[in-house]
Image 1 (cartoon, rainbow, N blue to C red):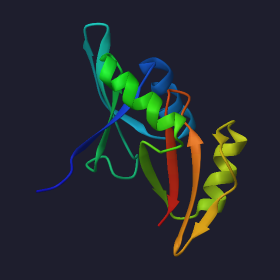
Image 2 (image 1 turned 135 degrees about the horizontal axis):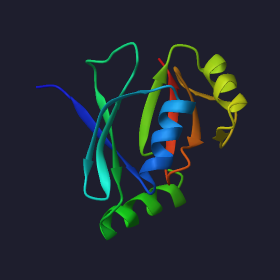
Image 3 (image 1 turned 30 degrees about the vertical axis):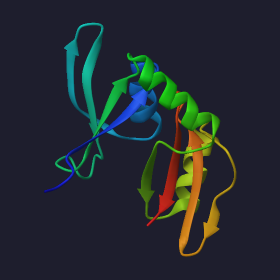
Length: 127
């Protein structure tokens, strides 16, 4: 068994597409129109066969409630990993990414949370 796909709830799929590709640097793997939205998956450009992120529209009231509750309580929806959090933090901040704080260290882990502009907090982790 393995993980192939993870959903990221987004309140605006087009804005999410731009943010996750133009700002974060992911590549589009699938972009298949499905009604008013799309089956839109992204991959890391250096691992196109790796785990896909599905930018999942919050079309159901339960999804909206979950997303809003997590955000309000400061709970990240997902974690993204980087080899050098200091460099990635500066790169993303220069592109206008809104971080909650400077990177923190907790035990062996360094992390920083940011707003993905689509209703979520995402945790950037060094590892």
